[in-house]
Image (cartoon, rainbow, N blue to C red; front, top):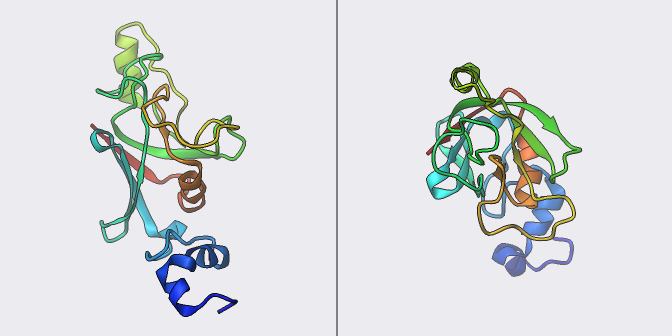
Length: 173
């Protein structure tokens, strides 16, 4: 077993080896997650969680998130620092983001644009699931984005691999 004793491998020493041998591995002790396994993404703002939901409607894996600086309520206008709520899709992948990778969220939808227009305002846009700002070490401990959903860079690496463009994302209060 490449120099690792069976005891060390079982006690967690094998996690790095598993990840190195299988880049789609989710985490030690869990089944690997592949792109076709994810039916949709669910974000639960109240508990700061992003969940990958499988074809069997069960949570495959959960990730801790940070949200917009004003996280309560649905995003209505540009600059309100709120994270949207509702049903959207992942509409693009950006490996050259100013954050550590990013997945575009299809906000604003028709209803979002209509609501903002009826009040003479812009709904904003450029909402993403992304990692931490490039060049930053560690993870912010509080809500800091302008409406996006931020995860650790390590988690973003995994999400970027397993989420496909067109994947539904449901964001709840």
